[in-house]
Length: 206
Ligand code: SF4
Image (cartoon, rainbow, N blue to C red; front, side, top):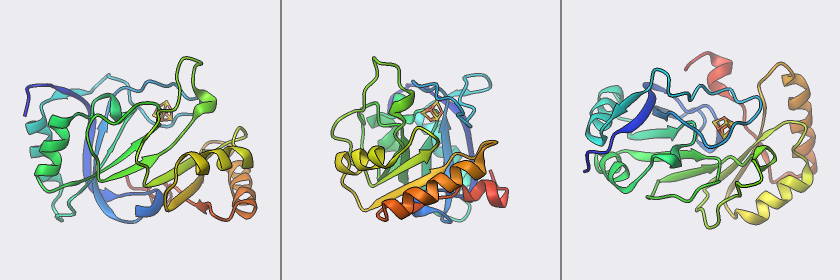
């Protein structure tokens, strides 16, 4: 373990994973501050305001305390978690018995292993200097659907990341009904893709 301090926005649990193939599963959450993108409509507060600088040991102690049901699963998110995920932290968290489930925007390589990688690409919102990273070991691809996402985009993602699980998920903003209708139409056009809903918002858990 190193003395590096990671910028942690919040840790909470026990709660449920709300999205993707593990939706409904009991987990604890580790949310880092900071993101390398600024997508319009982003619903996550990842600003450094209120974040804490914590060592890997401090993070593990907190996760263990939160995991009262011994789920052994931590969702590692942000912001963009690859900005901070490194071998020391991965070793500490996984060494404490947690499976690390990460959600990334796929613009950066992974500096250390995870146990489940969700790719949530948003290239339509990248500045030109940012590209999708190559070689990421995706376990699932989850595309948040707005007016910029079409069948061709889904085809490109499915060709780029070969994995078992492909999800489309409507943006949950003030045009939710519109995005949901578009999502359903995409599923009928591309049945490999399945519906993901933000269950945690629907049932009102963090
Ligand atoms: S990549 Fe995710 S966290 Fe970062 S700005 Fe976009 S939606 Fe928000």
